Image (cartoon, rainbow, N blue to C red; front, top):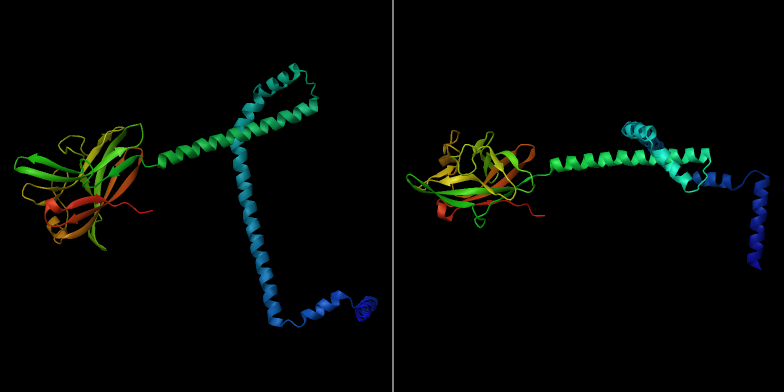
Length: 302
């Protein structure tokens, strides 16, 4: 009983408020008055700022959209001309007529137009797809490298006139069917910890055997591994960078660069004609004696 009376009184008050212009809208305005003025100002400013940002975003989007639409039209216009100027549409309509379909001219025109649009769009998309695949293929490294004491050919002896020399080498091969011409290697930096022992220059490294004329411009064929000389130890145990002339015309001298034992990082770049250059980081563990030293490729952990 009390609950029913309360509802009746509430409904009566609402009617009276409506008659005197004091509806729920005015009550809501009154409730807002209890919010501090600075809070209201902050909320209003935030809404205005958001609106401005949204407007700028849509203006930028419209500009980009216009450019994209124009690029799309330019890409499809040649296919459009070829399709509308050719006999494809006529052939399709003739086939439909031969099958007993009595197609009204207006319907035939609409169908032909839609077919031309769809085919032009598809052919344009296919062109872009082939272009993208070609670009990715050109960017894909074609030269692969290995270097470790356990990799066949990376540690090799050679007989010099003065005795037996020892070489540390990088195995280089190609992962494509086509041969890669003009391959060469260059040592560009020697580091120890955070210190750069030598850099800002390059020392050309030969493919073995260094005596061949193409040692610094080797063609690497499919399934054929070539070996790039990096370091060498002469028959007397002296450490050398294995340049073609077996000389080091740079400063500082090698004895100063490798005067301390420990781990060094050698940065080597291997390039070829029309293929991306490969950069290889090698760890040279120098013990002071070639028999216990090693050269290995640094592989990034995933």
